View (cartoon, rainbow over the protein chains, first blue to last red):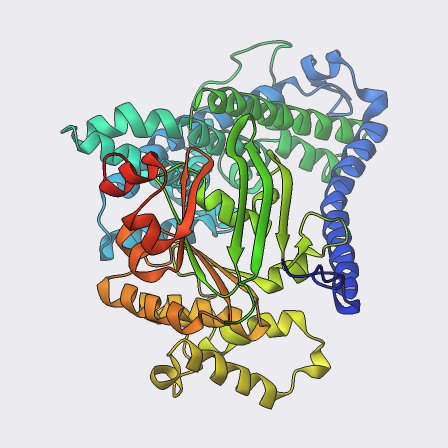
Length: 301
Length: 258
């Protein structure tokens, strides 16, 4: 045996300095991540504090009265639900199927690359431009008028590229070996997609779709141009107050008009509207996370 | 004759668990200084696990428990005063797939020097010299001396693997661990790496894990045969292949299993 050398592998001053730098770096990174929590807590705390006088179940279910200066947000709440679900009902199937084609069937040729480029660029178009497009295409050209259907279609166009992108990511995360196993017993591509790819990608796909709920619910510009209005007379608690060709109220639009167009509004009402908007979006996101956790727990790899 | 050959790595009753699965069972082995020692055995016998113990890579995974003693150069590497940074500086590792960093050939070779030295000590001439010495030692200098600034990831696999070995040398390691360094290479590449190992022998203790029994036979001085986490036999390579002491070794070498 070599005689034990006391100094072998022991710390040199340089190593000590590197360890100090390491600790510092780790601390800074950790602090930055912790800082993420701060704005969220502040926003929510501030909103609730200012909204407190108006918050009640009644605020959600009542219709606005006295020129928006009293009452609740029911018509706007229902309108937002209409818009979100209709737009996703259009964009989710198209987006998912397109993503399946792009990821599973399409070869890497110029057309595919062009589509990719289009998807990326469409995702980057500002919402006000989508609004103008919706106005021209759906309100005038397609003669839907200012209506829920025009607004929903505009929102659908806006959410489509992100759904395609997130679905493709979910599909790409399914291991290639699963597909090879299928192909090697003679399954067609469609059989492979149906029996192996989609079941394993579904959690990612759904998450991507549901996260678009918050975007569709929050955007004001596209619906302001195409179908959302300042006020619409609705019965309290009416679940189906709008038909597809009606105009509707929406929470984001309601918040905007309350805070900019109506004089002498009690301060807590716009904040309470914001709480309802934020609350419904967070609720949907929480549902998405729960669904993802459930579907992930069934994944066995 | 010179003094008796010293051991540079010695383990005593080394046990290792992945969670509740015991991957190494009472491994006690002395690996001699300056020789090429091959670790052979069927898949899952713990060869790679043993190799990875020697520069404490295993413990990065939280569920690994280790007991026993590993002495490298006479120092137990699990002692609290051992600096991982210094340990890994002296115990280098070459992986199955060549993993050059996506930077130039030159920067790959001096990477270790840069992270282990004060900036003020790094004279350009010193770095240049280290690059030339290391690349000459692995036989890449003639091929690459005119394109040291090309990206290392663009080289041929064989050159990449040689470069990965060259990357260890400026730090003057004492031990080089190789985890199936030739399995991604063709015949020519394998031969080149084996010749390189012979060239390095004597100055470095080389430990190589291999699935290829023929390679172990032609490219090592000593051989360790492992089975199901235990060390079965450790002998001179000729002896282990021609006259194995343990019947399990004999059957493995005949190709009865594994």
